[in-house]
Length: 435
RNA sequence: GUGGCUGUAGCUCAAUCGGUUAGAGCGCCGGACUGUGGCUCCGGAGGUUGAGGGUUCGAUCCCCUUCAGCCACCCCA
Image (cartoon, rainbow, N blue to C red; front, top):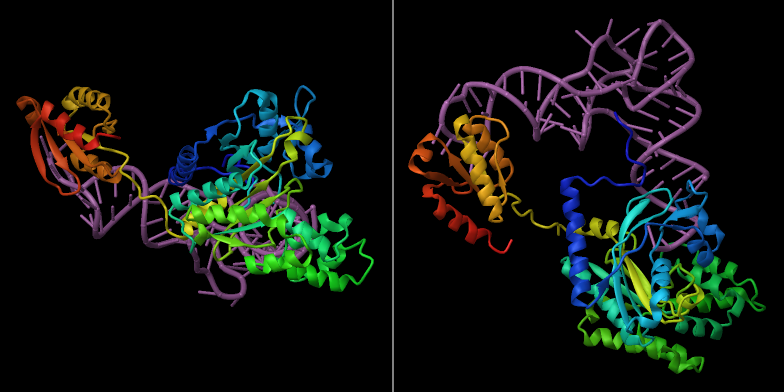
């Protein structure tokens, strides 16, 4: 046995790559309909590109090594830093808002589990240069439309939306010290995933002078907000009614787009990454038995912090692994379209030159053609044609050649018809037109 | 990185108490079938039982190590 593929890295056999292509096609289709342009960057980047933003502790999660030129390099774990650099380099000349998408293969050195490998493909869509909530709604709408394009509806997939500005304001109002906000965010992020969230929150409240248990209780109360009424009341209580304008405008826009059925307000959504500054959202399967399908949000300070142009931005990443699991679970695999139009059968060895000429002619006409690479019985050849799920067999034998015709067999019905060359091309050409 | 569970043919699984040559179905290849596919029947290939070591007269089975997969942590692209 040769060495196996590395753990967490996938091999795509034909039946598996068809699912991948199906997902990619949906991604590209939605990106195109939303007016996004495709870009790409290097899969291998200088290590600093990631350590600068996320700190040296992320190095343990990276596929990182020293190359032959003694450069510290890493396989890209995410696309945003590359995007920030590329946009930064041409920020002055790019017409805003910038709508760009990419389908990078990303890498991360972690122990693998279901839905999380060391490598995956991820659709990244970002709008850069527009701070208003309609940009957020546009991005979230695109994420939803990908689900729809794959046949997933509101009963399959849910979008949960929050806003860090709102959460921040409410937490401060509840008595969470400014210094503990980040830690408290991270604790809230785990609501619904771990039992002892209250304990985690208390632990996060390092700098709280008063009763931490009481603050933690209020924090949990805030994180449990799921509707506008409670949100508005909570904001009114701390005298900060206008903080939620962006979030509410975004929700209104999504409703106007007709996506209300997919969307839930959920203040327990925070996202792990530190750089989000506003609206944040996640897509989950409705049963929540899988990992997140998609996560994103607004990161207005990041591009400037990375040394590029100081532009507001909002975007998401959507991986192919969890999405693929869900598609399989919901039986939404693409129906296998016959890859082969015609299988040419050679009855005798003397027919081969005719078969080869015919294959060339049909292929030139755009028809998918296969023929036997060594002479076999007609039965054998038809077996192969059936296994290939060809629509037709075109049989060429001594009889047909003497008549200047071929025998066209419909492999589904079994009906046969002797036709001339021109008639054959016409018949096959019309049916395969548009392929 | 930590802990638990699991590793038998390409796939799904079997193999008595530790017993001698590790089986079956599906799939694959060939034949029955020298001008007609899907069905059927027959035959064949395919295994270092994940790998290495130990105990034993003898290990798929018991023990240790290691690798891989799954699950939970960690972390969340």
